[in-house]
Length: 150
Image (cartoon, rainbow, N blue to C red; front, side):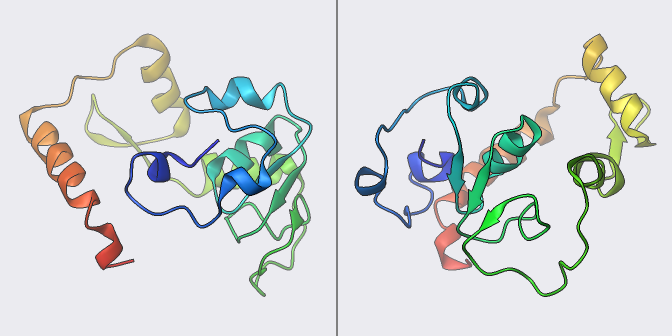
């Protein structure tokens, strides 16, 4: 499956998928595809992390945050600082609970992950305001120029 940024024309693909893939599926639900594959090969896509969480073997050609810890097959560069060997539960905790900071859109204060999950489950997320929509449009327009600063 092509990376969403590549499919949207926001950046060029680094690999000609037709030369490497048995099948190219687009558009498709990545989570549904993970139940049908034996392994995932990726450069840096978050899909590799989702595959790890679902128990699908992952080969990385780049160095995403989840590579280099002994949980993936790494064919790309591995940052020297990745010397510990966390298990999958420790990596998931670090990526989804330990590292991020969550913001409660109702109280407008920092909150623990459990509050954010409760808000999502209860449907208590307020609709974005006018400023948020304007910033989103501006971000979309500027995305086409991302190659200038990458």
